[in-house]
Amino acid sequence: MNRNQMNLSEMLRTLEEFLTKNLSSFENKQAIMSVINELKTKNAEIESLKLSQSVSTQADYEIKDSDEEVLIATAVKVSDGLKVIAATTNNARLKIDAKISQWDLSRMRKDNMYVRLKQLNVAALPYGDQLEPLGITKSEVDSLDVESTRLLKVKPEINIIQGKTTKATNDLGETITYINGVVREKLDLLMLEFKLLNPSLYSEYLIARKVNNRAAGHSSKDTKEK
Image (tube, rainbow, N blue to C red):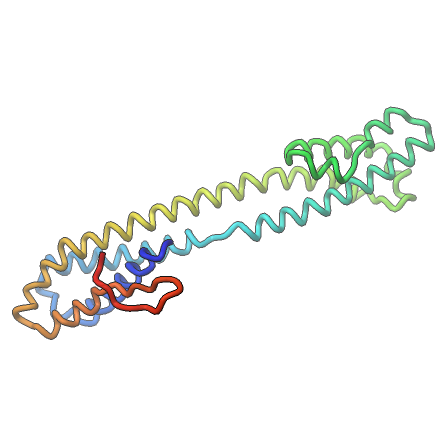
C-alpha cells in the first residue's frame, strides 16, 4: 500500500464517519444514500484487503532456514557415523553413500539437497544398531526423510501466501481507486445541493473530503485531492 493509497484510504474512512454522523440529513436522498452504502461496503473491503496484503512470509522463511540448518547438521553427523562404519568394515559402497559435507549440501539446489538427504537416510537405515553407539539415534536418521519431506512442501506454501498477498495488494489499489472515483464523480455533485440549502453541513463535508497528505519524512498538511 503506497503513501497515496494510505492518504485516500484515511480520507474515505473520515468521510464515512461524517456521513454516518449526519445520516438523518441524507435519509430522504436516495442517490446519496446509495453512494453512502457503497462507500461503507468498499471501506470494509479495503480494511479486509489491508490485512491480507500485510501478511509477511519473512518469519516462514526464517523458520525454514533454521530447520534446514538443523537438518544439515544432522545429515553431517549421520554421514560421519557411516564413514566410521565404512572404514571399520572396509565397505567401499557405504563409503560412497556416506560421502557428504555441509559445504556440499549448502551449495545444492534445495530440491536436490532434500533428495540427497533422503538417499542418506536409505543408506543409514540398515546400520541403526551400529550408529547408536556412536551417538546417532534412530530419530535422527529418520528425520533425514521426514524433515526433507516436510520442508519440500514449505516453499510452495510460502509461494501461495505471497501470491495471495500480491493479489490483495492489486485489489486494494483498484478498490481505493474505484470508490474514490465514485465519491468524486457522484457524491461531490450530489452534495452541491447542500451548498445552497445547508452551507454549514457542506463545509463540514469539504473538510471530511480533504486528503491529508502524510508524505514520509515531511510534516502532514491538507492538500487538494489529486
